[in-house]
Length: 144
Image (cartoon, rainbow, N blue to C red):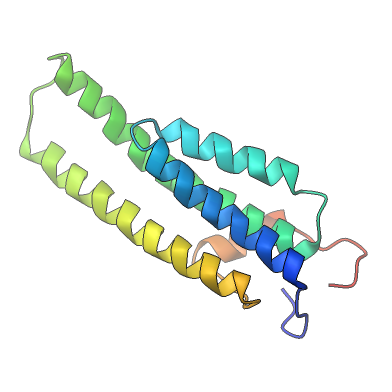
């Protein structure tokens, strides 16, 4: 992202909505990890023809959902296996449950912070996800 580019209000709102949508869907579809990933992907597809600022943040929101999907999916299926008496309840399960809750909480706080900052026009690059986003999202011939 270019530091000198100040996005217009509609761009800031659209970029912030990618994070807001992610927060809302995770609260609604928490037991089913695929719901959040699918909703973020649909929002990404709907905004891929917008400005670079909007596309970049939609891409970062999508990229950040993939690891969250994986850890939540493992917890979901592990829980199903416990409920079906396929595997016993263990301390490893509770340790993983605590780790996933912590990971989701950190992601929730970071997403909320990013949504607010992006809505104010500030660029927020997440530590691991921003370099991946830069690889996936390139500026077009637009002036951004």
